[in-house]
Image 1 (cartoon, rainbow, N blue to C red):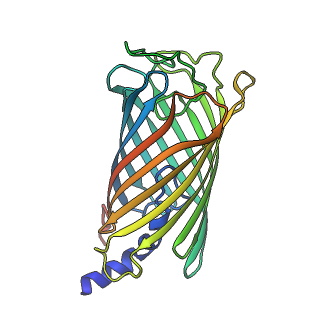
Image 2: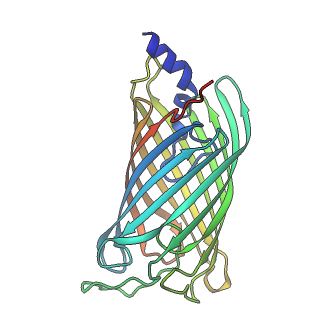
Length: 286
């Protein structure tokens, strides 16, 4: 009993922020300081130009350096641009929380993020024999699509069991290690998102081993800004999430386009993610 009470007091702030653990975006809140986490994300998608199902695997490690700063390092492997699953490259992501206003059952936070990716994929996929449609794609991303950098601002408001978050960012795409960015693809883009998460269970916290059930709805948009390719899209991504013993989470998400005029390789994605966190990875000795 004493152990459970101690755990609740120590990690209650983490529990109350469970509905901020979005699947498709990051909140302004950080993972706890002095913590370490790892996750494996699997994405499945039907590729329009070939009519076959592709898969991307993203192993990732996360480090809560302090209460204001955290870093992610991600590897990428997929068969989206190659006939078989191959290593695509990797990325590093850093987020710094610069504003925090806390109340009893609510808080407001803002953070800035930067991300860089090095990718070795071709920009036009290596076609398989069953290809039936010509390749036409104006969408680039830093998750296997192109090398580049991005940065932006995140704002998150927690209101008891509901958390709402918005992101606005800029993307600069560059040449891949084995291929140059085609002239017809936009090297600059703006991304934006609006996410909401609701803590459905438990109704009331009694011990650290209670399972959390969170529901999410996320709207994800992007607009190319170069004259050669000024187009845009908006996707919706509902998700369900389970958190076990406050340290392990399992996510299920489905993303599909609501509207847009951007020609894309992938319009629908199913995401399955497993994550585990370790708190207090080091202890200072007096």
